[in-house]
Length: 242
Ligand code: ADP
Ligand code: MG
Image (cartoon, rainbow, N blue to C red; front, side, top):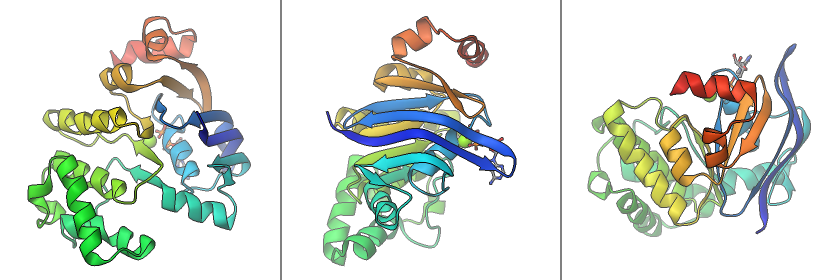
């Protein structure tokens, strides 16, 4: 399978604090990778470096062989990579439908009619088409996060990045979001997902990546990762979260 994302020896620092160090990672088309690790280990920074929300400062990140640090590579990553945040990041003053049609109209040049058809198709796919004319504030957290997923899908992304998409949700809403993510995985989407939802990782991930102190400490299949973790820091982490 072809490689979609590649990180070679990626590093980043904030002043004298090294937040990422020597990160190597390759993501092939259709792969689902779960990233986990303690708070502050650099997971969000890593995800945000990939889609250029935060620039890295050493090493190379490519998306479909284009260096994200170049102007054209940066434009490419913004067009082709979808992102879902912990706090949804929907536009509060726009309806659900308008949240989903904005980028396809602006960036892809779709007509309003075509963008609305597309948006309704994805809103229905995340089981929320009936809420299209509401504002985000009228929806539950789980519903808002499903809208955020639909909004990203409307750009037909090659890859979806998720940064703790269920951590801000009330417990009873976690399941509906994980279900939509699982469906997306089953449809073949390439996914890079920061999450501590270990049931999801076991079921969906091809590989689990464990980060600590800005480095990738261990990468393994979910079965190996959970049942036979190799690194002491991985074992310590797993014993804390379960
Ligand atoms: P995680 O997502 O694993 O919790 P983050 O990538 O958010 O970790 O953060 C990693 C470390 O970088 C943390 O110690 C955090 O305080 C620090 N950090 C994140 N953003 C900034 C910033 N803009 N300036 C300075 N330090 C930051
Ligand atoms: Mg984070």
